[in-house]
Amino acid sequence: MNIIEHVGSFTKLMKLTLTIPDRWSMFGRQYLREIMKLGIDSVFIDIIISLFIGMAITIQMKLNMSNPVLPGYLTGLAVRDTLLLEFSPTILCLILAGKVGSNIASEIGTMRITEQIDAIDIMGINSANYLILPKITAFISVIPSLVIISIFSGILGGYGVAEFTDTITVTEYTQGIQYSFVPFYVTYAIIKSMVFAFIISSVASYYGYTVKGGALEVGKNSTKAVVNSSIIILGSNFMLTKLLLT
Image 1 (spheres, rainbow, N blue to C red):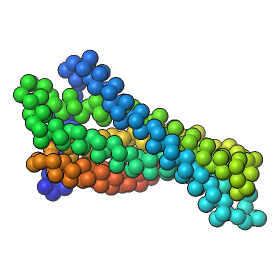
Image 2 (cartoon, helix red, strand yellow):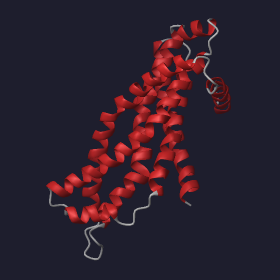
Image 3 (cartoon, rainbow, N blue to C red):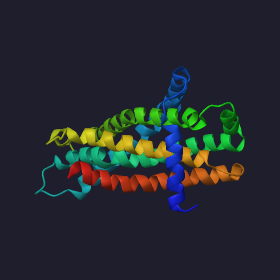
Image 4 (cartoon, helix red, strand yellow):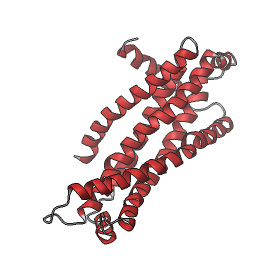
């Protein structure tokens, strides 16, 4: 399939997916299950990665900005804005594309090759809506919390460097964190992450839903889902940055 065919197939799938559920009680149960699987289960890796990234950025910024002309608080400011503007909304979503995206694609792909999706269709149920909509809505709902946790963990990691090493003083670090704060940056990070969450969940669902063949094809399509969603996220990141910050 070429890119135009993929876009057409994706659009048709989303048209089937983004409809009102036939049974809200069933949708609610699926939604809560996906919240746990896609969101809660990602909190640990979110915290660990953000902590170490915050620590690394703090050390690198301090070493590269070690100049008597530059004020000491610039390190904390750079850490805060790096986490807010790029790492937590964008790089974190690229990481989750690997974890969450492959999970979604392999789960739906396995259901496709074992003919479970065909059985759902035969029963008169909209299988795309039943399987995909809860995943998309759940991931979009939970991603703002993951971003906030990531920002907090990254800043905490930098604070740990200030507290337990002589790289930077706590006073300089906290001053930089508070200096010239722009509240819209938090909104910007959440908006970007929600767009990326839709990209990850919908693209992964598409590659899982349209898989043909056997178990080997499920693995290939899971890889394609991660790669293509990452590329789309990077392109969307440029456009959203241009749209929201200029």
